[in-house]
Each structure stands twice: as C-alpha cells, then as structure tokens.
Image 1 (cartoon, rainbow over the protein chains, first blue to last red):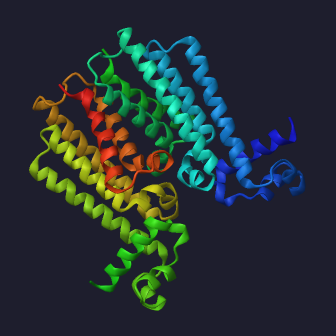
Image 2 (tube, rainbow over the protein chains, first blue to last red; image 1 turned 180 degrees about the vertical axis):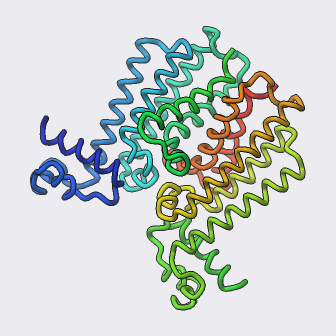
Length: 193
Length: 193
C-alpha cells in the first residue's frame, strides 16, 4: 500500500475511535511508524486529510449509486440493498457524520461538495421515485411536494441516524447498521401500493 | 430578572451565535456586566450552564406536550401546530441541537435525561398515532413495526433538521422553522386515510 493510503487508513481509524479534535497528525504518523515530516510531505494540514477522506466517502457513494443505476432500482428489495450499502458507508466514515456540522463549517470545500452532491442526489432520487410509481411499486396519488420533502427526510435520516444512535441505543457495527437500515426502510412502507 | 436568569439568557444568546466551544464564562459575565466571581457563584462550571439550559428546553417541550394533550391531537392541524411549536423551540436552543452528540458525550446527565425523555415520548407518540387511527385520520393498515420506526424517524428529523439546514440551505429564523416544519408534516401525508 502507498504511504498516502496508509496515512488515510490510519487517520480514518483514529478519527473514528477518538474523534477528529483529539487526534493530531503526530498521532497518525506514530500509528504507522512514519515521521511527522513524511506525513506532512503527503498532507500539509489536518484539513487536507479530512478532505481526502470525504472525497473517498463521496467516491464510494458514487460507486453504490452507479451500480444501482445499472441494476435499476425497480423494486423495494433493490432500494433496501442501496440503503444497507449506504449505511455501511456512513458507519465506515462515522467521524464525518458525527461531526458533520463542525467539519462543514471548518472546511468550506466539503460543505460546497455536499451541497452539490445533494442537488445531484435529489434529481436521482426523484427519478427513482418516478420509476417506482410508473411500475406500480409506489402509489400514484402522492403530490410532488411530498416526494420532494421525502428526499430531504431521507438525507436527514441517512446523515444523522448515527448521531441518534450515539445519543440513545449506542449500537455498534452491524447491529447499528441493521437497526437503522430497518428504520430507514420503514419510511417507504406507506408509499407502497 | 434574577441574575441566574440573566446569565442563562446571555449564555443562550452567545452559545447560539458563537458555538459552545468559543464562549467562556468570562464572555458571558462580561456581556451582562457582572463579575466572573458573581457568575461562578451561580454556576460553578460551563457544564452547569449547559445543563440548566437543557433543563429549560426540556421543560418548555413538556409545556407544549401537555397543552396539546389537553387540546387532544385528533387531527392533522393539531399535529402541525405541535410540530411548529417544537421546531421553534429547537431553533431557540439551536446550539444544543447543532452540537448534540458532543454535548451528550461531555455531559452524561444530559444524555441520560434525553434517553429517558425519548422513552416517554415514544409512548406518547404511539398513543397519538393510535388515537388518529381510531378516529379515522390515519390508515388502519400500518404494521406496528412501521409506527415504531416512524417515532425514531420523527426524532432524527426533529433533532437534526437544523444540522441539515447548516450544511445546505442555511435559512434563518422563521424561514428555517417554516421550511422544515413543512418537510416534517409531509412525513405524515402517506399515513393519512
């Protein structure tokens, strides 16, 4: 593995277990036995590491979306598979979602990328809803404003289920992913035909 | 107004505008022209101020709930009125919701109080749903697991719409409350008969 990848993997593990504010580049360098100078050769600032991890998260999400677009979300099973994969990714990059507001305020390029992504995802989700209405999976008597609101609800639940988990059940790993995937899937139940 | 109340009002305003981590007890004392010693007579630590503000939030929520229980939530209008009042309260105490995970980790008594409140609210919400099913407002063909999941969805959206707003639209005041109250109300649309 290249040093750059090693740094990012080590940073992800340390941020996830200790929180972004308790980990310095020194901790990261020490955990993979490289010098602070070597780390700084690859990443000038902590924010560059966070940005690189956000870009990876974003790229992995794109991978899920494109695989699903090729497979076509045409029933609830494929929607559920998408939900589970997405929630695994949220858990993998959990330090981002647990500190999203702070990270967005601190690194404006992440906030800008998130906003752009949301606009793209909004179109994609509404396309999926239209398909599921037209093939009879979803009801055809739901106003457009309700579908639009559902997209925002989806984003809030997908981005912040992990924060709810921290405040309440504190489930870990697959238990957390399974529980909240079910909570998420239930959002679609009343839309089904 | 008593000094204690003045301190809490000043703290709320400063935390909301600058974030809890950028405000010290000195800033709060200075903003109402009292000495740091006088402030510390009322609150030993910053965490005591945050706890007192959380208790106020919690008490104001109880007020909304009990007014609504007296009025009976028996249609979608009363549910919407509840949503709007709740979202006003979230906005009033926005520093708590924007840093909820951190505050919960830092002040265990707040996390414990939140968990207890959630259990109580879960019962209350499910009672409201049962009433709305029995009076014909809500559908009677929704499984209990879906109602239970809806309660968790409600908590996630109610607690974190403000975080979504920070990352995306950044609406302020009534504009934010109005927009997200509508997003929230739309959650109930497909459950209606």
